[in-house]
Length: 157
Image (cartoon, rainbow, N blue to C red):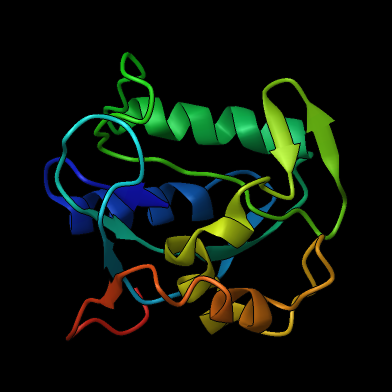
């Protein structure tokens, strides 16, 4: 998840609460918060990013619909591609089950290229084997040159 508009910490908090409240879904674990520069898109403020782990009985499609609803409820505006946003919630992984649909690709196709995804993911699942055959920890070592800063004073959120 990421946020770079408004009260970023509160928005991430609200997203966690709403994810945990989804039917047949429980929030299992959360990473710390990380501050990262935006990737692509127009000039914009830094993001706060976080990875959460859910246990869910929802299908990947139903989960995506729920995530899109949460984003809309929290003020997500999709008018500018890669533009600033109150909240962005991506489905990175779904129990190792691949999904390839026009609007849903799981595992997330660019997660191994992005330290702002891998750094918090490594807190929760460092040994998870990604589609490349590398673990999260190994993939993280390959993007060590990308700047990501753990937000001090934050424990698991």
